[in-house]
Image (tube, rainbow, N blue to C red; front, side, top):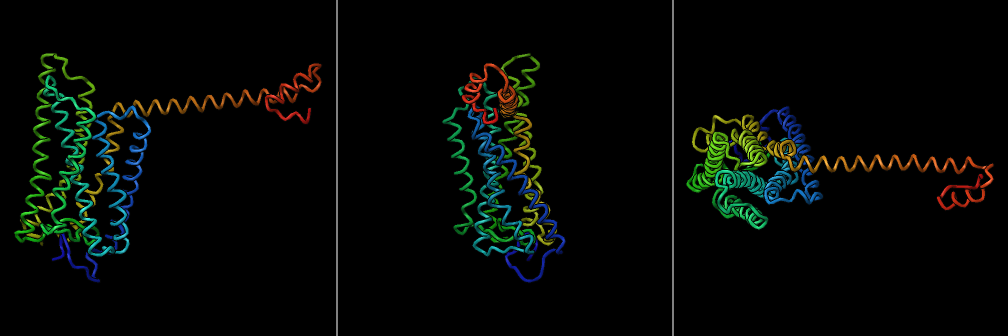
Length: 350
């Protein structure tokens, strides 16, 4: 069948040419903004050492994951869209499907770790749960190891990566209903979506209850800054789920329902929406992270002061040079000439 996934590529286009062109435009915009925004955050964080807190190390992992999607994923699908179908062969399809699945699972796993870390800090502040650099680095390593455990199986025969979304990209074979494919899809959804959602829900239910209890009894255990960080991570989670939920629902329909209900044109829309998730996190991070905003403002003020100082110095230098050139009839011309030469003024016209 050629609906959500397609393992056969023929000369016949699966959607109208206009659909491929529209998809190419959307993919270009996603790639451009995803690349620019995430790269901006990455460069700024690498330059500003004050941002390297344990929490921001995990957030940095999320930004890097999104950036890699814009570099390793969007160009493939963009060039396929302008060529009206996948052009990188079966091996390229497998590689692309694996990389995109790995980065997608990495993102939701990172958000899950961040949510649980906030739960430990806010709901259980009296336990020794404070995040440090060692535990942050260990968390990042564990996130990637966990993501690999969910996405490597199709490379060794459990499940497979095939063409999808009108042959614009590649992903898990959602259509195949064999025991091999169905068991892998259940495994992927159980540990790649449902378990993270359970942990996230548990974490934020307890965070909200703790915040309400503290507010009611006016116990100042939870700082305003901690609440803001929890809110920022919550918005990131909502944005991610908003982008990926239509795709996940459609994949479940194709696997456990009637695949004929999902046409190639219908499959393109949730796929593009899922890919757009790389644009949201840097905007949310820049807009809601007080530490990042403070560092950004300090950098901007420093650059502005430097620019103002340079402008003032330029005016002073020009004033001195002009005074040296205007003092041609002064009785102290020889002394002034020596001063001006030492200062660097051209005195050939004196």
